[in-house]
Image (cartoon, rainbow, N blue to C red; front, side, top):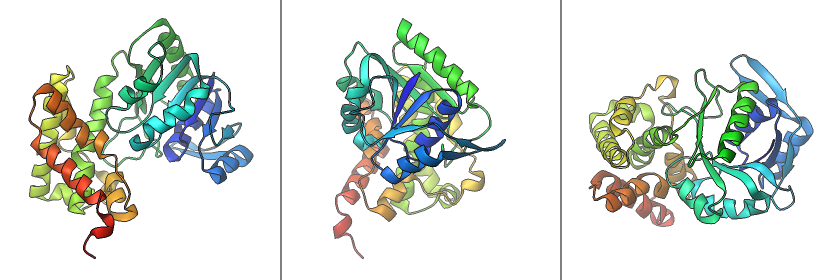
Length: 310
């Protein structure tokens, strides 16, 4: 099976390594030339609970223009870059190519479907996440859930083969009949906490220890659960799973959104996080004042990095 990983940073490298160990022909597609050169020439040292493995045999290219048609194209870029990444991947997408999203947030599959012809299959792929656990750190238990947006003979065949590749490569994966719950479970965990850390300028430990910050977190979470319920997804179960995350060693963790706002001063993925909940709320007639406020605050900040008080 020929698979292209569009966006091959830390997370992409982890899942590319699982697939390569499983026997897939893996192409890393990323503009970061030094990383690609090292992966091709020296391989990638894959750290796992059962020991380190040197994974070799990758192919690499800065764009998808010349890699040929793939069986599977996995999109793993920031959600602000989804449309650009999918359009760039079109030379590798054929009539029977399955396109998968391994991205944070909500709305990625819809963005992909607007660009990829409707006859082609689209998967969602998601790794379970306790708050602050990076996908680049392999963990015990189910490490990956994936499933088709619409199940067809093609998606069944490709999904079954992918499951075999992941399993052989050492990744405990599930090919789920309904992927939506897992997509929303992970997204809601991020939506409820990530932007809030940036706005409060607090790491996870301090934020969850503070009663006022935790109250804000729960307000965001309740709105997410209400929207999920309206979409036919078990929002009550998501609420229960997310309401008190086990931080463990991740108390000092700052979310990627907080890092975007506080360290790198760059555009965030807010439109695919709290902004997505606000958008769903408007369509469904559900009030989402917490998410509306967080979205407006983050956008006001990211549009004025150069103008802020120093």
